[in-house]
Image (tube, one colour):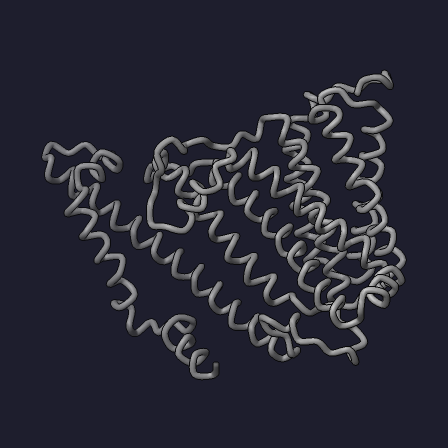
Amino acid sequence: MDSIEQNANDVIINIYWENWYYYLAAPFFFFLITVLSNSKNIHYQLRGLNFESDQLEQFSANIKYLFIRIASFTLSFFIFKLVFKFMIQLHDYFISRHLYIFDWLVLNTNEVDNYNKGVYLSLVLTILMFFLFNNAFIKKNSDNWRFREINFNYFKYLFISLILGLGLFFGLFSIFNGIHNLLSKGISDWITKENVLGILPIRLSSLMILYYLLTYIYSEVLHKKLPHFLFLGIFPVRTIEYYNETISFNKRETLFFCQISFYIINIALAEFFIIINFKHIYLSILNFAILFILDDFKIINDYSNGMRKVMKWHFWRIFIFNLIMLSTVITLLVTEDYYWILTLYVILFGVLCWYYLKNAGSISLTNNINTW
């Protein structure tokens, strides 16, 4: 591992500016290939200055494309560099704490606290799924892109990928860590300990939320065409015939996605505190609130046909528990000085609120108990 890390530092992480021409070799190479094979399209996309000579105008377009290629390569390189560096640091962090890919299969009945086993594998699988989904999302919109345009669908897909990643990570962690503790302690001791610590409710919530999220994405994002989507994400193809649908964040189903996403970020924080072995009365309140309202929300959503006509009390019950979770999380994070996590939490919450309020006008409230 030390030799791998050293090679990574020499080749990728550390930048040697005296060898700048090596870094420019790749963008120049792809620039030449693209210009020689697709110069007419580049000329059409990037023409702007009007020259009397067609050769000068085409030369101007090619120079613009060269700078775009260098800028995109530089950005991609630095993103890859940071991700690779972060992965190595993360690996070192896990190894220093005796955590590795299959640590959840290594049983030790003498351990007092087993609530960090399975984190490594959950993270690896989540990263793979995130890149798979985001790769397919980008390809689905690639035909509509222009060199000077950014398709807003990309950001919608990126946001969905982030929420999916959170849900997958903590759902998978609940599964792997639950298996580890069940095998280590036995079913009777496992249930007793998990109930005493208040962990069992959040495990159930994680599994439920993972199921709700995956069924939503399968129906509303993938349009029930999972093989097509996976084919796009895994193989080097850009389009698939009869598969060109894009998502819409202006439909009623967005209300469901925003609410489920809010539950996911709260479950993520609850499980984060479990992993770091943090115990607090506010955490117990958060765990109870999530488990209590999660199934209620799904039932209310299903029976009201996606909040199409929902009883006022049911709507306000969801709203009240949202406030309880929001205030509890903020209190926990401020109390423990986790201000950077609080910042991320508030940003995600703000985005979800914005999308929810855009579609909240489609909710119809009623006092009629026979609505269902």
